[in-house]
Length: 223
Length: 116
Image 1 (spheres, one colour):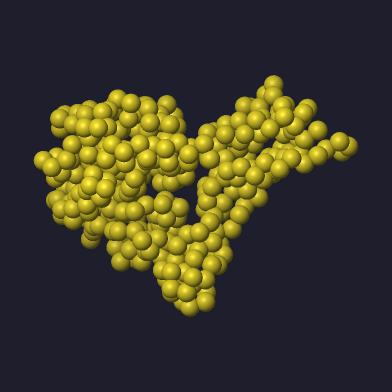
Image 2 (image 1 turned 135 degrees about the vertical axis):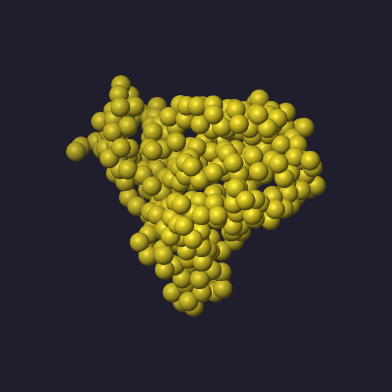
């Protein structure tokens, strides 16, 4: 065709979000507040893990939660019942949180008086891996009933996380799940990841996980 | 899944170029998408067709090229490409070490566009 010319663009499509996320991280560090982004499939146990984490750390830390849900308030109500401020973000069909949505959630919180904010991201292993939320630490939960093939199916998610919580280990033996294989698959994708085996039901492993989180929060608090 | 917000960003970026460059119509937009990033090419185009109605980008064709996944070995620093299907067997082809970190293969990038 005549008159067609080429214009160089050379732009990252997510550049806006990445810049917002970076600005958010700087603001959090200034307030000495740690932001943890927790991701998983639906039903892996995000809300229960958050409740157990709060229970373990609430004596020493001031904690709030941002709950992302496509269109319900169920999770936020559970957190509020535990006496913790929970901000509900209705994503209105969106499958993930991005930095602007998190910023909106933080508007309802006083960062200066918080040590830790936990984001419960939307339940899925695809979209949340693509969008930087501005979190200082990223964690994901893989529960035993989901199967040990998830690192093969959703490799990106496993490469963006600092921590993997293998939850519902009380199901080991009932479900066909090879913990050793999962560990090997995940460490191959992300050698820097820390893995904890936990059960929100029996409390197993929760102590090790919350000690790790306490250290992560302290790094931000005393920096 | 997340095709809609990605498409919105694409449109926003290309329309930003239009006035300064005297663009009458955008014909094709060349995108690069990392092999690790899940994205349905067909849906991106559907969303784009819908969102771009009435703009200079209306009817533009999105040409999506996949960019390879690369990892770097922690032991010998060798950088290598790997196909997504081969990730279960990820190891350094030079030294056989299994500790390798992701270097590239995710994200979305607009390379250039054809305009009249």
